[in-house]
Structure formats: C-alpha cells, structure tokens
Image (cartoon, rainbow, N blue to C red; front, top):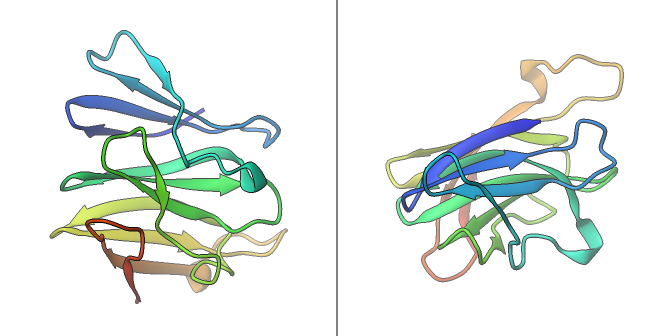
Amino acid sequence: MIFSMAVFQDQLYAAVTSSTGEAEGVLWRSADGEAWDAVTPDGLLEAASRPYGYGAMAAVEDTLFISSTPHGGSVPHVWMSPDGQRWERLTTDEQFATANAIPTLCGFHGRLYVGTFSFSRGEFATSAGAAIWRFTPPRESASGDPDRF
C-alpha cells in the first residue's frame, strides 16, 4: 500500500509498505507522475534491520525525510537524504525505544516534527501513547537536536 507521498527537488516520491510485514518496503520516484522508478537507496536498507515499509515522508528545506517501520521487535526510525538517493539515519534506538511506529512527519519553520505512538497488542492507540518530537535537521550529519513535547 502507498503510505505517503512527498515532492522533493521536482520529483514525486511514493513510500510503499507491506500490509503483511513479510515483504520489504519500496521507495518510488517520478519526474512526471506517470513514469516511476524504484529508488535503491544507499544507506536506507541496513542489512540488520531492513524495514518492511516506509511510512511518513516530509521535505524540509533541502532535505527529504522518511520513517521506516522495521521487522518485528525493532525500533522505528527517521532517515534523511539530501538527494533522495543517499540516506542517513537521523534517530537513535534510544529516542524511539518505546514507539511502535512513526505515522507522521511534518516540516515547520525549518524543523522536522515527528509524531510517534506506542501501544500494547490488543489495545487501541490512545493519546496516552502519542508523542511529538522536534528536530533541527543538521546540515552535514545525522546528529539532529531532538526535543520531545
């Protein structure tokens, strides 16, 4: 399923996630909205934690961000790219250790806002498990400055 779409550097990106969790996600890119190419992102697919899907996407100034949902038991992450091809992880395992997913990303005043949620199996997601994080994206490395609200 297409989970999110974003425009970045005159390209339309579409993030695909697996509805079963058995297949890996795919990132697609198009210059005209008709012809699409699968992006083989450098750095985005770490061998030890290949995501089954990509979630939210947002462009903030000259950087594209995407969230990944890992295979069972791992922590979701946010990734950043200056060109849609080379990717670097922005978040750490410790930041989102209690999060189940990152369903939304948004750029606002040059910062990235990340919405997370946490819930136990059998529970409905409630506001008690929700959090908003704010990052000031770094220019040269993925050591963003996170603030949690």
